[in-house]
Length: 230
Image 1 (tube, rainbow, N blue to C red):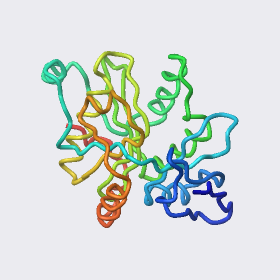
Image 2 (image 1 turned 180 degrees about the vertical axis):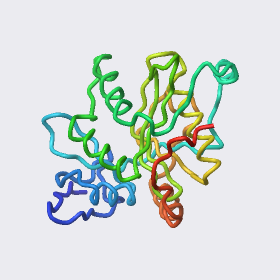
Image 3 (image 1 turned 60 degrees about the horizontal axis):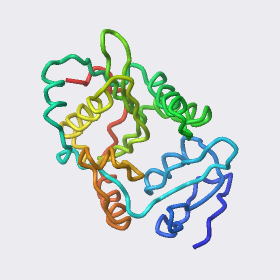
């Protein structure tokens, strides 16, 4: 399959099924709100590093987490029961996205969460589409995740932790919230052993896209989620 060059004027994408074997579908375009939302609604997401053009992906298989399938270890259950962590939604989005980028860099890993990505997703947060789930300990942000909510889908982008189990606590909170408000699927994008161990599983791209179309028929859970953590 060819890798498509996107039109810079219109937020249009080729069919997601035409992605390369590694999931690469298209190159170019921009990170404006209209294009990003159009991409996610078609199961496509941007992922690239400094010095690269914007790259758009739709991998096959796709890693997803159904909220009811989250695996919580005995040790994590104990941590949650003790209520050592405080969970907040949307109270510090900018700090979460910066921390996700910084932690990867500090650990010697490359990051796609470069400044223009941070700016684009912060704008989506202001518009009520992007959200953060945060884990706090003694008034300090120690873990969290962020992503985009559309219809009955949450598209997870990244997570970080500076204290054991802190990002897992955020994920538990997200799945509980998802069950309350009707979010049916959490898109994890690329496969990692860490997420597999937490109950995420790979599904065929065609199945993912069918589920996506079904779940996006429902209204967006738009606006701030601040104050909605249990």
